[in-house]
Length: 274
Ligand SMILES: [Zn+2]
Image (cartoon, rainbow, N blue to C red):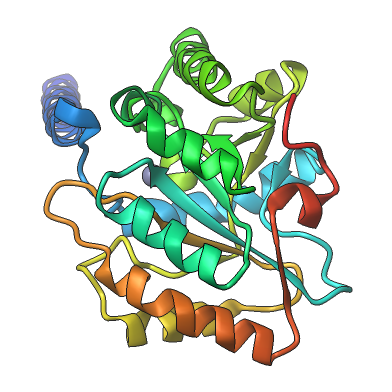
């Protein structure tokens, strides 16, 4: 009997050790995949399952931090915010800015710190053309895997770069992949930030979709107060022509449905700066 229990224990310990090893390896492989940092490059947002899992906890985080962790604006008025992550990008961000200017629409851009260092003129252009700027971490890390101290470093380092370029410290943070731990949200609130994710995912980050598919994805969950996730910068092997080509049609579609396109400060009634 004792021997049997001992064997069972050994088997369990072996399994535990194996899973720790496997987890360690896959976490490392993932970290390596997002750490190609030349010219601010990183792997495209592709963790669909992770997003699903995260979205379960987003509702809880919003309940816990109702004015700090947000997924949408008020549902009672027909206003919608376009948001573009992973800017600045020398190829796609100027194309998106041109289209927004042609249609006289202002949006919100979430900036990756190390990309801003490489392309400061594009960050200034975003700001000068009336768009709002938010913080999207320094190197597109999965922030929920970081210690609080390292999370703070990601935010402050990016904050310093952006503030130096546009003259204000952005109030809004969007964590890469939308993932953040409750203690990170709590600290963000104390430091004067708001976390803004989205309730409409264009899924433009997955498999270089066509503009038709992007419009279809957006229509699925669109409603008054929605915050739409799109990208103004590409990861490794990603192209955003779908996003660029869909944008004029998206603006026409939204205007046709009677929606007003606004920035996050306008939609949420919160300031752009801390
Ligand atoms: Zn991103």
